[in-house]
Structures are given as C-alpha cells and as structure tokens.
Image (cartoon, rainbow, N blue to C red; front, side, top):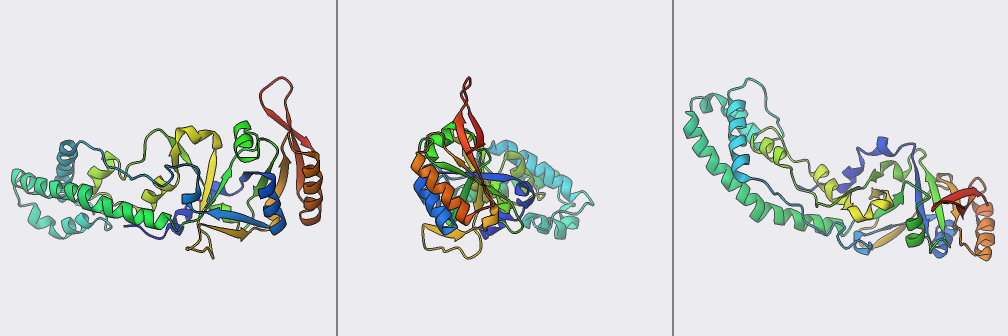
Length: 305
C-alpha cells in the first residue's frame, strides 16, 4: 500500500511557490549553516515531538451503519449504467459481473455482501492495519525532513529555537528548483488522523473509492498536536541524493535562496559583528535585519541592523 514518499511532494509545489520560509537557529547552528552553505535534514527520530510519526492511524466507525450504506451503494452501482472506478478492486469485479448480479434478489444480495464486508473489516483491523503501520514506521525512520516556519516574529519560536533571542532567523525564498518548492504546511489538531473517514470507507466498500497511499502518508507526515500550532510549520520530505542510513544529512542550498538574516534582540555585540562580516563576505546580497522589543506591546519589531 505504501509507495515512495517522494511522491508526497509532487502536489505541493504550487502551495509553496512564491512563499518565504524562516528558520530559527542558535548562533552555533547559524555559523555552521552560513559557513558551509548547508542545511540539515533530519530523521523524525531526532525531533522534539515524541508523537511525530510515532502514532498509528485508526479506523473508528459504526460498522453496522457503514455496512448498511455500503450494501445500498453496491446495489445501486450494480443497477446503474455508470462505470465504476478502475482503481477499486471490488469495482472491477462489479464491472465484469453486473449482468449476473442484477438477477440476484435484493435480500440474498444483502446477506452475501454483509458477510464479505464483515470479513473485510475484520481483516482490515486485525491484519492490514498492523502490517501497514509497521511498513510506515520502517519507511519513516529512513526519511529526512527540513523544517521551516512561515513567520519570523514569533516570540516563542525565538525563545525555543533561536537561543532565547540571542540567535538568528534565516529567511529563505523560493527560486527555480528550490527544494522547499515542495514544502507543505502542517495541520494542527487534537485528534490523531484516521486511515479513512467513515464516508470514504463506505465509498471504498461500495466500489466508488480507493485509498490513496500518498494521501494517507501525508496525514501522518503533516499532522501535529494543536499545542505546536504556534510554530506555523512547513515541512519538506526527501530530496535528491539523500542518504538512508544516517539520522541526518547536511545538504547545500543555493546562496541566492537566502534572502535575509534577522539578528535576535538579545544577540551579543561580538556575534553581531562576526555574522555581519560573514554575511558580507559570503552572501553580499542578503539583507541584515535587527529584531527589537516593541515599546508598548508584547511583540517584536524589525529594522536595519
């Protein structure tokens, strides 16, 4: 069921194109990034969220209601001249057997199909889901992720990831062939995502729907607890030339992708001088911006360094 997760990025380019992304970093991390012209892509195992890709998708439905609606949908499909999706396995059977099935009395049809649906739902929960989750975990352990925020002015982000406002924020822009052209936003919720919603399961059992493994994987990849919503995170998965064995990999970025650097409001004068010189030497096109505390509000304001 699971396919190459590089497919996760294929539909996201339009969402990220034209956006700017921000990376909150300590002075030490910023020096490594700017000196080496590289960003670190990390395995989910290294993340500070213990739930990230470490939970199972679930199926919570009213089985009797699902069964009843799926049977009715199958019956209507059999007696309809409309084609059924070719990607649905049951749909293929229905398509090749419509004439025969139309001669079966409704109650007899219901009894036979109900048994098959019960067997299918039991197999899904007892066998297919555990196998799928195991394959997901094995795949995700080898994955690498690059994380950004869509905002540069979050006080908590500066505190948590930019050395209590002594660090920096790096602003990257999307240019042609940028890896983060494939970035997608994280969805924040109190509930763990389901493998399928009840309506999708009814359509699947009724031959009208097939599970898209890419969409299912995205529910894991781009879902986090509501507590993390302040991060306003965007993520990029995979990329060309990425190693599967290491927990992280440092990959080069195009210097033109770096648009601006924000100095924290508590940055030490020595660090400010060092980074100003480094940026002028290696990234002369990059704007240097200084964060300051607003006078009458709990927010940051920005101006020339």
